[in-house]
Image (cartoon, rainbow, N blue to C red; front, side, top):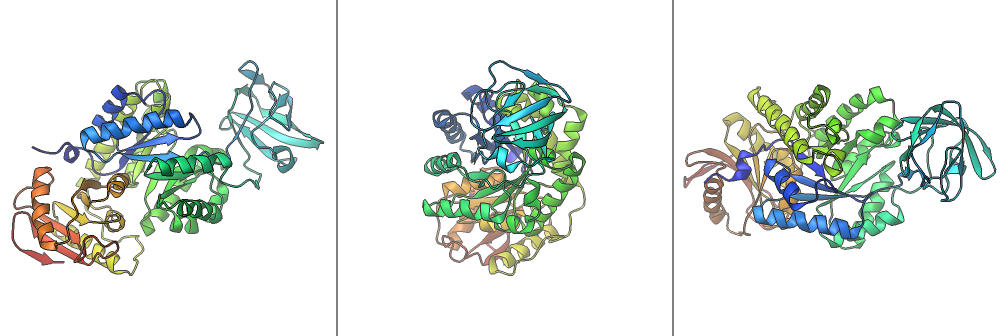
Amino acid sequence: MRDRAADRHTRTKIIATLGPASATRERLAQMLDIGLDVCRLNFSHGDFAEHKRTLDLVRTLAAERDEPVCVIGDLCGPKIRLGQFGSEPVVVKTGDAVRFVRGDGPCDAQRLTVSLASFVEEVEPGQRIYIDDGLVRLSARERRGDELVCEVVVGGELHSHKGVNLPDTHLAAPALTDKDRHDLAWAIAQGLDYVALSFVRRPEDLYELKRLIKEQGSDLPVIIKIEKTEALDHLDELIAHADAVLVARGDLGVEADLWRVPLMQKDIVARCQRIGVPVIVATQMLQSMVASPMPTRAEVSDVANAVFDRVDAVMLSGETAVGQFPVESVDMMNRIVAATGEYIVQRPARAVSAGIAVHYSPPAAVAHAAVQAAVDLGVQLVAVWSATGATVRLVARHRLPMPVVGLTYDERVYRRMNLLFGVVPVRVEPLDNPAAMAEALDALLVQRGLAAEGDLVVVVTSTKPTTPGATDTALVRRVGSDTASAC
């Protein structure tokens, strides 16, 4: 019987943010059946009790399906938010004077408070203040003691806890807040698969998070979210030290000129792929489906464009967290990804290593040889035995026209690999004997419906299969045969 995972798209993966609209057994089960690969817990909303219920539900459903559902915990970072209004919405008009005051008291049309204690000191006269993704825009005019007097440049409605962006202000606030530290400890204790760092500005922000993770005895991989223009000044260093990168177009589109965001997205994706770092495109991909069962044509093209760029994953946010059509949003995303991926596969294969930096290490060289053989021979798949997932990433970064089957005995690696482009994770028993591995592989591929007797496959393995970093062998093998040839 053909394994259901083999019938699912194996190209760009789908991430969905879970929330009140989707964190029920029935809806999440439907989303997983359709093609959801990765779940995101947004620590900006909800408490640990809610997140624990959601995580337990994900793990239960994944176990019932024997599927590697990956879970990301997204840290809030120093997001600035308005305080609480007594009644809302509150309307401010162009030309109105509005005061930001210290403290956390109530807000009204003339008096606003925010979550950043140093807001009044750090924002200088002449600098821009954007509220609710720029729907309301202010300009700072003067500082009067404990107040910052601003003029409304673009009026509109204000609501409690809406986000505030400062595109002209370089804040001194650290990237990790006290809340982030508590959330990180919870994520590690609960065994989440990735943690995302919000509002990264400089490499030191990433290094601090990695230090905290190491101090807690964890190897939790870090996804950096590019949503501040300051991060663009350090992009190469950030990418080089991240485990994955997320292009967070929402805040980035407010911090930078909106018409430049597509160019930034293309550049970030290209740089990540050049050195083989997984990359995710996120925010408002099917935004109209928050309230509509169908997306716009422009949104469909936006998702397809990301798939054409062979990103590792595309992400749904409000569409599945609080939207009216969470299941339909995943279904639409899956249809776009599958159709676009099928079209890409039909096109001529790209040259191996085109645009990809070559890292001169034995595992990278073996992976490169395996990829070249796979493309030259047009094999059914590339099977990679991996203790840590590192060699799987080295193969997957080449964006092959055939699936990469990642074989691992580590439950964490099994789930983490499901974020990677074109990878079908498979959990196996640890084996020390390379000869036994070949026999086990044939049986597994046939059983899962990933290959048939006589199919040609490329196998990447090691003479020391359970030793991390010891990849040293690439073979061309015909399923069911007793012989294999070195690449």
